[in-house]
Image (cartoon, rainbow, N blue to C red; front, side):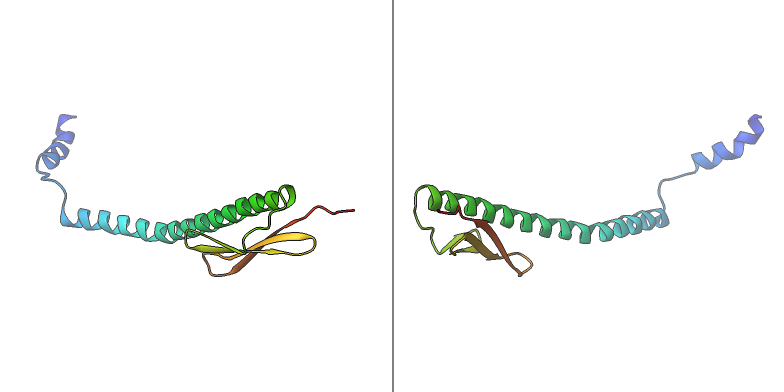
Length: 117
């Protein structure tokens, strides 16, 4: 039995570490994995900024809706938060906020005003 393990033990004792081929294989696997994760990361980052802009618009719309309905104050025509300008419009039955988001498309969020009788 010991004679069968002798070549294995001898081979392990002569091992001097990683070869260049081992290092290149590991590096190529790492670069393929990182290249496949990078587009996913950029997509998640873009979606996060879209959600942040929509959240800010919704908060501003709620704030100015309360000021308009409860305190009868007219909202400003425009408000800049960060790099995004939010524009407010009042019609007869709704208050709207519009902005140009991260992917450069226009977004409009509206909230209806209470009816007066």
